Image (cartoon, one colour):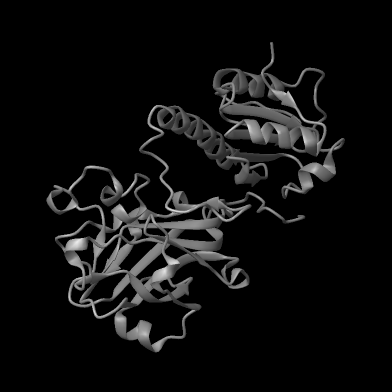
Amino acid sequence: MSKTISISSSEQLGTVLQSTPIVIANSKPPAAVTPPEPLLVVYRAGQRPPPTMQFSKIYESLSNSLSRAGKISFVKIDFEENGELVQSHGVTKPPGFLIFRDGRLKDRTLGTNPLELRKFAEKIAEESIALEESSGNAATSGWRGAPLPRGYNDVTDQVEIRDCEVLNADDEAGTVRTLFDTHEPSTLQKGKDTASADTKDWVQSGSDDQLLLYIPFQSTIKLHTIQLTSLPSADDEGEVSRPHVVHLFINRPQNMDFAEADDTEPTQVINLSPSDWNDQGTVNIPLRFVKFQKTSTVIIYVQQGDGEAEAVRLDRVKLIGEPGAKREMGNLQKAGDDE
């Protein structure tokens, strides 16, 4: 018996989205499929679909093997019969593939490039594996210091962590990778003495209260909010502080030095006060969304810490917005293109 759900209305899709963490949607099967393995989908234009399309068998196989009740669902939306519904999610013509997570669109791809469709199918499999792994460790994974803005996703997984760089970091604190850790900061974990922790899971400035953090993305994203978490220890009172003045720069090919950052007009300037931070030590920084529609890199320049402290600390950084087209997409049509 098929596990694939045929969607005929926006209300039905909404019901599935509310009840399933991950939904994979396909807008009308392509004309013909001749993949060597189930996860590869190839579209050949100009061919009439045979009575029993090979694609349907492959999609059903993928659906039957990965579907999990209440966790991951596969759906089909016919483009000709429900064109308005699929177009509302950026699918202008078939084939189109969408991944929803927690009720929000996380990723999509349009087009007929076999290699890119393989990559997208592999991403579906990776999502299902990650979901299985996280289900047994929900208490420690996917930590959030503050609620997400309505209608937007946590796109921190789009960060190219290996190419991130932080300047003026204290070598005795954590590395830049710790800023994107999905686990709850050790300072917030009950009964843990962070002063004696073997690994310090935060970044702290060295010579003064400034930090320059360079963050490149795997895709060009729409950046809506930056979420910072800073948890100075009570033992560091007066010596280590939270960020106070933050300058943001976007689409720089590499990190800036401090002199360049001071002399360059920022994309946005943020002034934070103690009342902006919640009880999790987290602040949501809303961005001027029109300026961050196509963001490939962002530099977070903590220009000044709060008060007279000699150092500034960051525990976590989360990026909130909408994922975009992968930079290596090749010939795949980008979402929203009509050609």
